[in-house]
Image (spheres, helix red, strand yellow):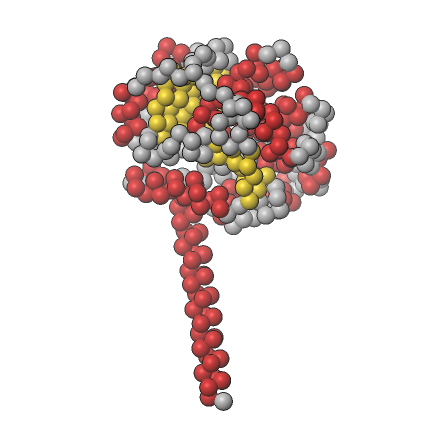
Length: 392
């Protein structure tokens, strides 16, 4: 009898110890993950910022289902005539700038990389640049007839939005960040989580996208002017995912990877309900990102439906309400534009921490920049590379 009691007590203590360790592990994980998404990275040491970078590159992906978009069957190499750029090398050495690529419309003119922190074929997180991929694929879906019109209501393609704030909101307004959902979602970057956060609870607590949609109510819809909320991209992405044959990943392979001649695969994440996550954390190589910019220009200059779509995106963009010096003042289909210092027609892709692609729609030149955090003078890089094409 005494032996049985001792055995039960031993088992109980063992279980309690395991539960304690699991709870402690969970606490440590969420503390670390929150740190990794924090908006105050500029205050951290280089060593700490590198830990954050590695978490985003590896551990985050392990927490979600990964959908792999295969590289092109016939990868294309861009001509590279670049020479060492000592000014950029100096900035890279002193900061967390990882990569600067500049394609001048014919060949790669600038090719600098922090070889200690990044390899040429690494799949780098996009942050919010992923949003522009959705806007681009939306155009192809319209051209191919899978989406009848960009002015159709979102609930026509994503029934889960019926009875929510988003019901009857057009795809155009959604992709222009003009759904009127400011009452429910108010976050900037990856700051402290609140009841109106989307990014952090989705990424850290694994709350499914659909749950965020269902909490919204039409009666609280604000005026439909520009308001940057991450969920709008994921809603449009999943409308595409559910209406494209084979889903958004297969379509992305056909419309981007194959046509751009991608040399590496691309990866995006799905939540536990298999909904695609595209507001951020698309993973692709530095060269693939550059080729995406080039592909957009190639489509822009073509005499085709997608060219007409891209021109309409520019013409029907809305005010971004950004007024600071050097601001992108216009926004359309998840692309930024209207930046006055740029002396050419352009589209911009922007992501947290300095991820940037600038596409010159006049010449086909593409500037692509990646970094862990923007602890450097971004405008200085632009001046070094773009020279007379930018004026502050």
